[in-house]
Structure formats: C-alpha cells, structure tokens
Length: 379
Length: 76
Ligand SMILES: Cc1cc2nc3c(=O)[nH]c(=O)nc-3n(C[C@H](O)[C@H](O)[C@H](O)COP(=O)(O)OP(=O)(O)OC[C@H]3O[C@@H](n4cnc5c(N)ncnc54)[C@H](O)[C@@H]3O)c2cc1C
Image (cartoon, rainbow over all chains, first blue to last red; front, side, top):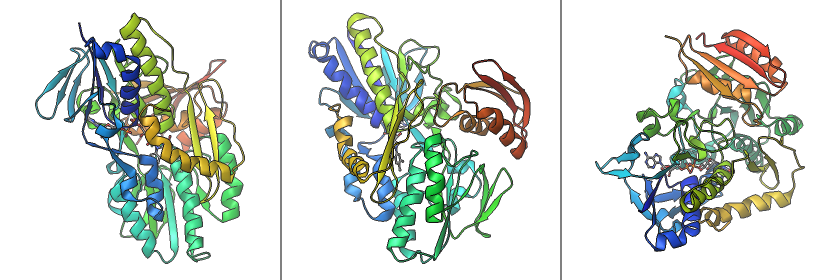
C-alpha cells in the first residue's frame, strides 16, 4: 500500500520537510510505496529575511523570490490550491477548488500572518516591513523623510524576534548616513519590562541604544493608534507622538487553522518534543504555526523540520520513532549596517551573547544567499 | 462562560513567559483566565508587575519549587 504524505504550505518549513523526505525515502518513492505532495497557496516562494533590507534600498525585489517548483525536488508533487479545511479525524484536507486530499501523514506548515487589524488604527496609520508591499511603502516613506519622531513599535506575538531590533539599529545608521543626524529621534517600544525577550540581547541593547540616542519605552502593548493626532497609546496607559510609525504588528496563524477549529488564533496545539498536533498520531506541525512557546523564526522552522524528516522517514520505513526536538533556535543579528552577532539556545541551554563583529555581518549576508540551499535540503 | 488555558513556558528563553502571557491574553475574552508556568526567576516580579500596570487580575501565584505558576484573569 502506498504511504501518502501531505505537506500543507510551501514556505520554509514545508519545503525543507518535503526535500528532506524525498531524499530519505528515495527507494520507497521510486517503487511507488510512498508519495509526497505539497499543497500550497502560491507558486512563489519568498525569502522573508530579505525584506529587512528592502526599506533601505539594499535588496532587489526579484532576489527575494523563486518559483516553488524550482526549489522543490521534482519527485514531489506541488499543487497550488489553498487548503480550506483540515480534518485530522478523517485524515483529509479540503481545498479551495473543491478537491480533497487524503493522507497517511500530514505536515502542517502554514506559517503565520500579520494581524494589524487586532489593534484599532494600526493597519491604516503604521508602516511595516514584514511583507513586500509594506516594505516598499516604507522605502518610499524613508526616501521622503526629512526628520522628526520615529516610533518603532513591537507587538506580540510576532515572528523573527530580532528583526525589530535590526530595524531600529539599521534605521539609525541609514538616516545618519543620509545626513539627517540630529534631525530625527527614534523611540523603540517593547511589550515586556526589558528591551528584548532574549535577556543577553536586551542587556547589550541598553548601552548600544544609549550610545546612539535611541529612546525606548518598555511595557508597551499597543491599544490604539490615532492617525489624526499622530499618537500611539499602550494598554499600560502611555501615549507617544510620532511623525513616522513603523510597527511589527501582532501575528496570528493561517486562516485555515482557525476555520478548521484546530487552534485559537491559528496556533496549533503541538507537543514541544514530538511536534505532533495534540490528539493525533500522524499530523506533524512545524514552523511558525505551532503554539510552542519558542521563537517563531526560520531557524526554528529549520531545526523542527529536520526532526520531522527523521521521524517521518523512520515511521514509514521501520514503523518506529527516531528522536525528539530539543528546542534549538539559532539567530544571526544585524547590529548595524556593517556588524552582526549570533546566538543559539534550546530547551536546556540559555542563550549566550557574543560580541558583534563585521565577520558575523558577512556571515548573515552569506546566509541570506544560502537560504535557498537550505530550503532545497542541501544544508 | 469563562475559559482557562495553560501556557507552559518552562525552560523557554525567547519570547519567554511574559510575552507568551501577553499573546495568550490577546487571544482571550474578558473574564478568561490564563495560567502561565515559568521557570524564569524574573517572572516573580515582572508578571505581577505587568498584570497590575495593565489592570488585569492576578488570581494566584504559586511557587512550586522548580517553577512558578501564575493565574491571570483578563479584565479589559
Ligand atoms: C522581515 C523578516 C525578517 C526575518 N528574518 C529572519 C532571520 O533573520 N532569521 C530567521 O531565522 N527567521 C527570520 N524571519 C522569519 C522566517 O521567515 C519565518 O519564521 C519562517 O519563514 C517560518 O517558516 P514557515 O514555513 O513556518 O512559514 P512560511 O515560510 O511563512 O510559510 C508558510 C507557507 O504556508 C502557505 N499557506 C498559508 N496558508 C495556506 C493554505 N491555506 N493553504 C496552503 N498554503 C498555505 C503560505 O503561503 C506560505 O507559503 C524573518 C521574517 C521576516 C518577515
């Protein structure tokens, strides 16, 4: 009997799982004992970390995209037909066209989406760089910017915990390089009582922000934005004026997760070690869409995907479990336009900082290029 | 009817217990309760402090030896 593996979402996690599995199950696929299908909602795969460079004119649009078909191994079927309902009881996924897909194993990798609508006034009045139209619009706004008060506003939950810090630091350098030093003021707002969730990074940020004159407001969870008064107010009762507002909006999981009753706000309840969707034995969850309380980041998606590949391949070939996910997350952090640092941690090892260097900045830029190799399953 | 959900944020370093609590409350309705488990000593101060600052209700806080458990009721 043929084992049908269905992967929902052709983003980073889904693509790594698909390409990893096809290699591990090469002989089963050749003999027709196993088949892998990716069900996606777009034929284009976007390299999201590249969006950070768009507002500063440092990334070309076409560099950010590849056809998913060319990223996936050709032994994988790719079907573009958005999933509309996931039925984990009957092992079936319904899609927009009316087709439905049965599976033996399911991998849910539908990522996260921006939800500025959760905060009144945010969508209408704030810039953001977490999707391409937003990043381009911000690029235009920065080109026109002559000076004034900028608020970089961070909301929870959001993917890529370090992108907001990188934005604040790169923005500061970018505006100074444009000769606007002394004419602008950046205020960075953060939901909890320090500058970043990662404590070593938060500690590093304090003197760095001081040195650059970047102001900050902790315990700031956005309640509303008033576009006429040009103010942003927090649930904690603070109000900040702005001339340019850049937000990292709160996120939620994919609509199909909510529509399928699989998880509140689109986050799928997931076992942090097995990565199985709670209450199932054959539906794995990987990447941003899990409800596991760790960073929603590409590296998390990558390490989770490797675990799912090992387990799925072993289950198909030998009917047994291979290994648990250890919670590993790794991040490169841009500390300016020319320097960077890195950090890793897992469920048992706290993060340790390392001093920023130009070398790490070059590594991050190199990693930007290597993304496609890693999606292809070559790294 | 009010609901209670548990967020087990023990041994997680980023985004951490308070950020998880904030996200869980965002997904809740007024009257719902969130129980958050944390092994981070900083939570003893920052979870009650934040709860007070925003105006939610700290229903209980419990030292369980190797971790803490806080129950917060969404008030607004
Ligand atoms: C500006 C920015 C900078 C970042 N920088 C970094 C960084 O430096 N390092 C890092 O590790 N991470 C970074 N990230 C985060 C990283 O890109 C994400 O965490 C990662 O892409 C998550 O992978 P995923 O597969 O879970 O989700 P995605 O890659 O978003 O893929 C989800 C896929 O599911 C598809 N989908 C959704 N709904 C459906 C449906 N109903 N049916 C079918 N398909 C569906 C989507 O179209 C998408 O293709 C950054 C993100 C941004 C926005």
